[in-house]
Each structure stands twice: as structure tokens, then as C-alpha cells.
Length: 205
Image 1 (tube, rainbow, N blue to C red):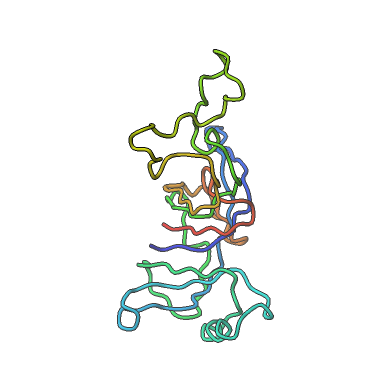
Image 2: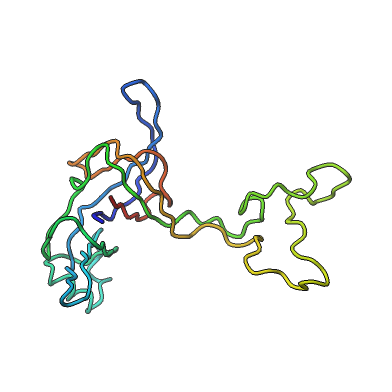
């Protein structure tokens, strides 16, 4: 699948030709440099490795420095492989946001916002125990019973309970590309994408 690495700029909204207000996300997509070309003969599969966002030279290790030097580019903060790229590209090629066209559907992958340790109401959408009636005290957001007594005498694996929430890889599929601003490397997609502002995302079509 063809794609690019990008950075989430933030959310806004635009009006369509019918005057309807559409919420959308602005992504800085590329430019990405081809830092390695995987082939069936050498690696056993076909893929393109892309690098995005320049890294300070002092923060690039010697091995990585040699790797990027082969592609004729500086060190990159984010490196991602894309399998089954539609077009053939060579080492050192620069891919821009022109890869996408308005009206296309794309999948956007990112790391969701971390929310820390949360209870079952926020984490799993539980309704709480007994609501606010029948003398309940401090039980509105409690998880309730988590298992039986004599059998099975344990809590089943996968029981939905409180815990760390967010900070996971999330892919949102079939987002419509509303605008491509080539001169600023910006991509405007309909709806929300995972992650906080300035977080890295992967856009695939």
C-alpha cells in the first residue's frame, strides 16, 4: 500500500459546496525520503523504507548515519516501511503529498492520546452500579461483581477492569481526502485521527 509519514497539525472545519460544516484534521504529510528499497532477491519481500523529519546530526548514531548516507540524506526521526508500494522508486527519491488526490480514501494510523489509569466507566463505558437510587453510596462508577464464588473461584482472563487507557496503536480507516495543499505539504482529511498535536501518523491509501 502506498503511503507517507506525516505529523498531525490539529483539527479545524471547512464548508462544502452545500454550506455544510465538515470537521477535519490537518496533517503535514511528507516530504519523505526513500532510505531503503527492500527486494524479493535480498530481503524476501518488496517494500519501501521512508524517512521523515530531520534529526540533529549529534543525535544520529554511527550505524544510522551510514544508513542514511547511502540514500544521500540527513538523519531522520521517523522511519517506516510500506509494503506493496504501487510505484517503483529508487534510493534517495523524495515523495511528497502529491501522492494523494482529493476525494480518495485513506487509512491513518497513530498512537492514541494517553489518559493514564482510568476506571471502568471511562475506559469501557460501564453504566455504574445501581445508578443513584436504593441507598447506593460511592458506587456510581464502581465495576460491580467480577466473578462467582465457589466456581470458578477465580477471575476470568480478559475481564474488563480499570487500568491504563490510551497510548495504543490505532488505525482509522476510510477517511476522505478533502484538500491537498502541495506547496505547504498539507493534507486535509475528513474527521479525526488518533494522537495529540505534533504526533507522527502514517497515511496509507
